[in-house]
Image (cartoon, rainbow, N blue to C red; front, side, top):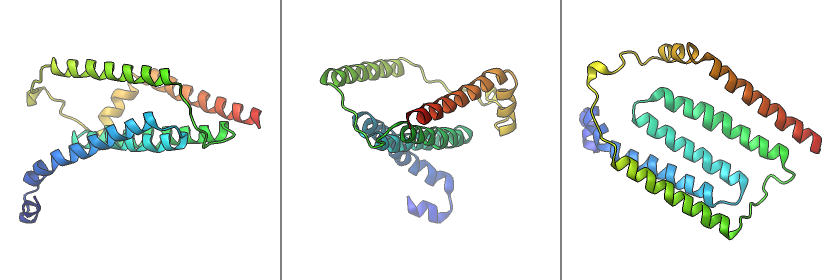
Length: 180
């Protein structure tokens, strides 16, 4: 692998490293998601969520979806995670509180998780994989085109989501202030 890099053929070396990177990002995503489920400390759950979202962003980068990867890191890993951490710390008297679940809640969660995993595997196994001809692919992948598509016909849902996030932040601040 490293000899190919030294010879200056980047496309061949990328093809050799891609499966390793995929396994690394997929393992990070699945392992961190599992740790979110089994952890009982809210702050640790937030840290595992950061690793999960980072792993998904890495998978997006590998699929050449740089815009989605950047949005994943900026919006979800940056904004949402910080909102969760501050929300927990503002509204909780003890930010390091432990969550205790009953045994039947764990059994139900495991059963639902296994059921959803089986459904996903069945759906993936029955989905045909086809190659899209290059003449049918969109020609422009720049941020301007994505922005025009997002803010053109989807302006109202975009603004409604922004107002909803603002209302949630104001509500969390109001609840935290009232308890103090």
